[in-house]
Image (cartoon, rainbow, N blue to C red; front, side, top):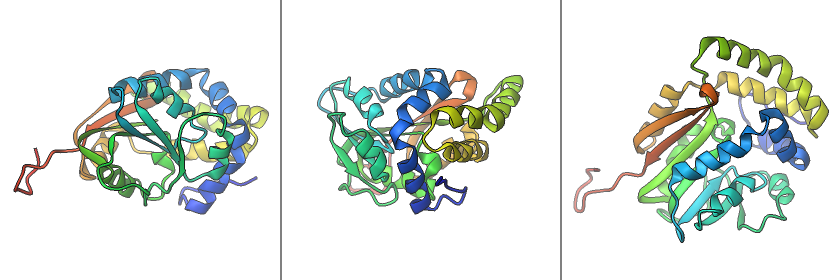
Length: 238
């Protein structure tokens, strides 16, 4: 079975997600105990979307997250570089685009809001991806990154990491179409930076007003930020 390593070669990552696409939504729901639905709803709420706004859902996979965003009345497009994932979500009636997070096929400032859920961790260069997201967002537009985090309560953090190492692969063996991919999932979560570090990286990529909110005792975090406005006739930002 295909799986990626922590060097996150784009071809390996895309092939890995192609391999899990068929049962991806079911596996996520089982592994999270249904929390994935709550995380999608919280992401939509954090974006504060309004009807008619243009929204990019990057690393959208099967577009289940894009459908949730569309409940706001905004126009939402699903983008992913795994064709297998996009095909698995073909029945979901939202626009879909094959796209590389490091070279987005959109013009500057076209979106009112952008989001990426559980995808930034899989990009070879997350900082470049955050800068690309800033490029395609209008001044004053919003970003929400929903990603695994570092649990803040020590006993829970110990149990959580033990679960990633032992429970996650065992469950994936039963429900996933590519169990090896979920070994990579556990490895990539353990290697991912804690919330304060990610917040600093978001700010360094050109975003302002960066803040985060922990979900599920910090196992997941929502990072919010805004694309700065430029002062007319000046390079200074506000």
